[in-house]
Image (cartoon, rainbow, N blue to C red):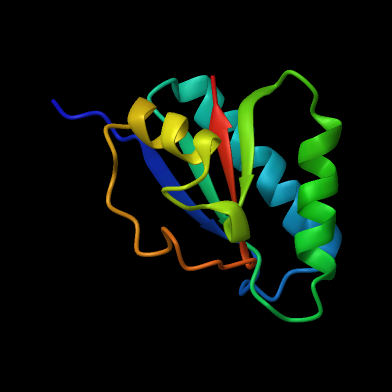
Length: 111
């Protein structure tokens, strides 16, 4: 039985309000942490105005100690130490956004 290591949560293209998008994020994080087999949530916020991205990252920063790490898409590169640690923890999963400098995504690395 293979373990699922990463899930993608696209809240940037869901047409939900900002508040509902953050509720969906909280729900997904809580469910993933409870399941125990998810290591990373790849949160897609989309490019748009950037407001959702800012809110998601602010929310992540308020969650002190809840995550192993939070990696912004623009830092997600083989040259970033935290990225390499996270990817190693997850068996170096395939991800098309590696090295793409994509600020429309945020990775949440779970304990």
